[in-house]
Each structure stands twice: as C-alpha cells, then as structure tokens.
Image (cartoon, rainbow, N blue to C red):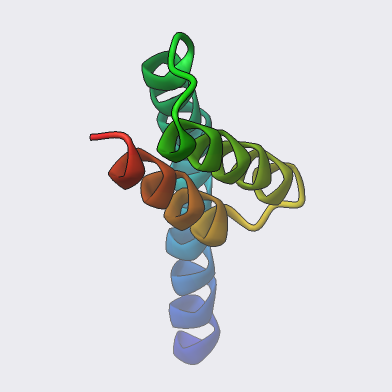
Length: 78
C-alpha cells in the first residue's frame, strides 16, 4: 500500500513539472520572436528557425526539447 502511494505521489509531482515546462516554452519563444522581429541579419534568421522548431516541439509535447531549442535561439540574438 505504501509503495503505491509513493509511486502515485511521484507521478503527480512529475505531471506538475511537465505542466510548468509546457507554459514556459511559449513565453521563451515569444520573447525570442519579439527580439528578432525587426532584425534581418544571419543570426536573427537562424534564431527564427530555432523558434519555429521549438514551437513544433512544444505542440508535440516535447517541452524539455522545446525549451532548450528556444533558449538556443535566444543565445544567438543576445
């Protein structure tokens, strides 16, 4: 009985963490797109591609990968 309670609690915590990541991706993508909106240099073009890829990953529920991709795009335009 105790083991199943621990497993259920762990599942709940992990589920909540996934939800937190899910809301982070769009914020980072929006921040990045706002930064490159009026830029036309090569690094901005590459960042835009990364933000688009991050959005696709987010929609596929791959939030960790999406966040990493979006942050990589932000690093290009800082």
